[in-house]
Length: 373
Image (cartoon, rainbow, N blue to C red; front, side, top):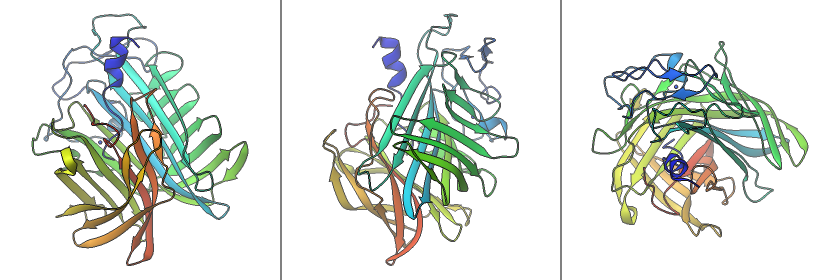
């Protein structure tokens, strides 16, 4: 792997929980070749996340190519034939440090990567596939005016009626799904400016779409499965500097509750499981949580990476105690051929006082090796 490609892939694994834009505020205008979706940075400097930036839609559903990294992340907990399944698909865009003055279409100015996975307890581990390409090559697309992403026949798009469609296929699975939002974009942090540490410069622009209704079909080992019901979560986040230099990774949750409410929460971890930063936000209350605490209940050690993941969590937010139990323990993604390492991304059941109250996803990064962002 050449140095430019290594530099492009080293940017990130996923996000705490961490779009086509008008040029980044204060940044120079990008140029674009006639090939739709090919984004060429006009400046060597990455754009900076600023607290006074106000997100605008629909343009901020699209790509922000002046920033170093960006992702569109969709997870769903669905029921088919009486059993729960977890579904996820994520597209990552990475602007590299390759010389932007090079006009060649073969120069990797921007990379597009994607992961797709299905969690099925009967199968025992994730069904997972991944792709990567430089933008403008082999049917890759990352539009700036709205969510419109493609890597070959893998796609994620938002329509003018605010519905999302996605399609992806792996060796032993396929998904073809529709997501209908229950409301407008939910801005995280302070009006979309999401701090990730004590240094105000470690931040992202971040919004969610919680409580999406799910329809469509899955295919497992060649057998089609209709979605009987389901609820999904979409995150869109972009940044140039995310983690404090002392950070090794994060734990993040996006939870949809049966009563229609939702919770996003994360903690940034340092060495020896120290906590550098926490944040949480209730959607229906419209306010940030006053306290967030992640307490591991059960660990699982991966036979592939050797990472010891806290796959069951007691999450205490504003005095409310939630128990998160995994659909299955082995929900580790081996992303070494795309974003560069291992992380755990799992469908969870949410319990409160022993009673099922919701579903969601837990993301655990930096357990196999510290992140370097």
